[in-house]
Length: 159
Image (cartoon, rainbow, N blue to C red):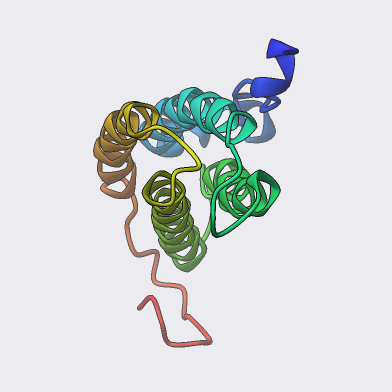
């Protein structure tokens, strides 16, 4: 198996260079929390990729069926972390956070289901779940750096 395929996510690239030096300090805490969260996600993502690559046939579906559902959710999380870092509108940060939570939960539900139907071993699911617990801790720290910015939300959702 080609191990380089197990984690195609790029390393975190600092976004501070995009801002004027005098304004970057405003986003330092949020960007540091985003970087920690992203790096943890890279770790989880590698485990999820390995899990998905090792799925086996079950009575209710092929490995490809499970793999596609799991990876569809997993691939959406990294860009949401990246796009919510720095000087992004509060409502966009909250929307991305909600999508990260949603896709993380969907991914774990698919992993749990794959174990339930015999397509994977529970011990692998447990390792991913432990890492997801660490991810959720960092996620809460990251979201705590968000603050309303006074901009109107045309949809009235995150006000």
